[in-house]
Length: 326
Image (cartoon, rainbow, N blue to C red; front, side, top):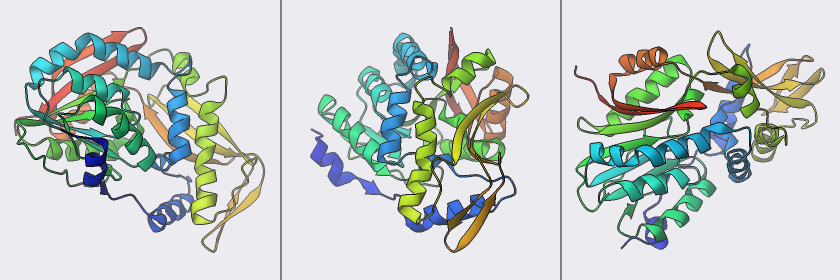
């Protein structure tokens, strides 16, 4: 029997500390095209805001993926087989995971790797009581860096890496390929990965999902500056930047920026960063895919599609992957 207390005792805490956050912020703001890593959106408040985003009328990915999962989980469970160790990258609230673990045949363990300790603990509190026979082995860490996956008490037949929410779309080019290669290593030779990908569609529908009418996404984005002010001592004027998310049809991605509203200076770690009016800080990409563009990424990462399932309205996909023959 696995309990919440058991899971908390098994928790591996590799949360990035203040110095890592500071170093990443200074490096990003020092670039000609200023950037801040989107992984730092997810402090406790940011995680709560993102969960609210997933319930907005405009944000279609979560509800579309949940509906698609409900339709195809029996097929996924058949293909994965019994006694899997599920390793999830970015556990979030655990809503999708609960359905997956419930559908699989006698899964032995679940390892969520999540940068937000608050989100990680929340998902474990949801899942552990509902799935007492699944060993919970949570890891609080940045999954974009190599993470040692804990071994379950009972041997697993294979690993299934679960990466829903089209989170892969937050990574551009070489970073996406590197993450997929790391995923292949985590899966092992006989493992599988189940990935959610958002598909290219009407740009107006996509843009609306990242600019909800209630301004929750804008608050989520701006919370990154609040976090920096609190945790590393910057002095961002929270009224001096606004959220902007636009879809590039040439690059098939949402590009989210925090845009300076006037000429201003921001101070951090003894450095001064001067902003012109209208100057952006790039804080997130959200790539959308075609079959061709996604397959091109997989080929470079040494992966291939075992099975695919699509929702059509709006277009969204789930892909089951394995390591390709070398």
